Image: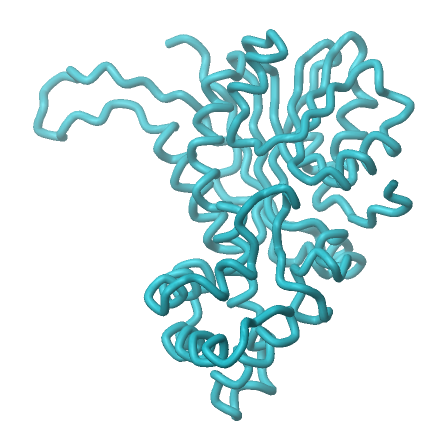
Length: 315
């Protein structure tokens, strides 16, 4: 039983406005978390339906409690949002009117030490959003080769010291397995030049982000999920996606641009022969960001970006 699932929904009303909710529509919250966004969607439904997806059992339990006044409108699903089409098929749903995906990790997951997401809290290395998943941070840190660790930390952490960090991890685990977040954090810090340890972000921030992304397959899921959702949106339906770091935002932006593109014929062709039509219209040419007031009250929102797309009608 979860007594408190603490998470402040980012850009709450910006998301609700972006979804342009129809009271009798069908909506999907791909990352339900504590249910903050879901609650505001549910409040606006009358004859409509909300599908709440999350792979974290704790999140779903908390959301059920928070949404207790609206349970007749809601279906809760424990799954990865990458399986959105299978989920909708299992519910007998062909088309939806909108979807929201709030990517990243919830405050609850960061602040609950035993989940092993935070370099600030001592805990067993875990970082699984779904605790029933096979791959954990312990596995990545202790079984990946030097080359694999360097790739993960470089690509997903964008850390210039990835080769040195990977080398230090491999050296440390030859003596004994690396079991805790504190052990890993100390190893990463030792790989940084002393003059850089006291400035900017904590040295372990990027490595922990990288390992978390690897454990949960976060970036790999973005493009296929967006494409799947767009394929199930009714004409005029909206998709809103919140990202929290440049890698996520780049993946969303690139996928949106690909789906918004029409003809792909070479410029030299006098007429279009490919027949491709835009699948979406991008509503946010530039991403929406939190207000200064929101950032002041919720520091974790400072890097958030909201991008919104609308399903194109028949052309």
